[in-house]
Image (cartoon, rainbow, N blue to C red; front, top):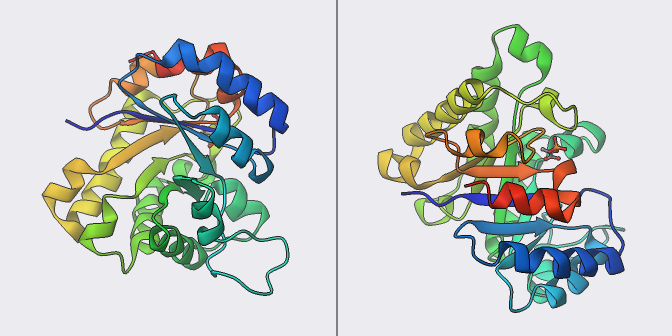
Length: 249
Ligand code: PEP
């Protein structure tokens, strides 16, 4: 059986002292969970969060990575840099990065490969816009994004990847996908992975749902057959709320 993986995406929120306080507050509340818990924090908070999370069941992730190892890329952070301080996860291809920072499927693919090269587990986001869903294109879009993101990955690497199905219209809007729609879309992704890597891999790979997950809808979503936890934005900023989401299943 697949485990549930609950990851928080703090986006551009929280100063180092706030990150430390958050981790100290939430750690005792979630210490008995069997779910995997990840906090993806801003670069500036990574080191402090890693220190604060020592001895807890909280793992720390970044929100972005550059695909080159080093060089003249002002303002960028590489996989080897993240790995060197003990980061374990990195979000790749979040819709906000695709939309505001022009990340293409090709760049997403390169970033995934860079993450894997440095033994970081990428959390790869895919999802359709409202217009694409209304036009009946949702499945096609997420199939294509999944295929392009994973292009060239071998079987050994694929199970180090977590996929997050994040319909763009549900991110930060309060409008959550229905459990049925979310589960169906995740099945589409799982089928796509089955076509490339076979049934064994498709049954094992972790696929989360993301988009306005809250403590009030987490249980229903995470109990669906194909939803293996969530990528949580806004609700991961409040310790009580995020703890309730983690403890929902
Ligand atoms: C996200 O940023 O990945 C996200 C799902 O945000 P929210 O939970 O706020 O919709």
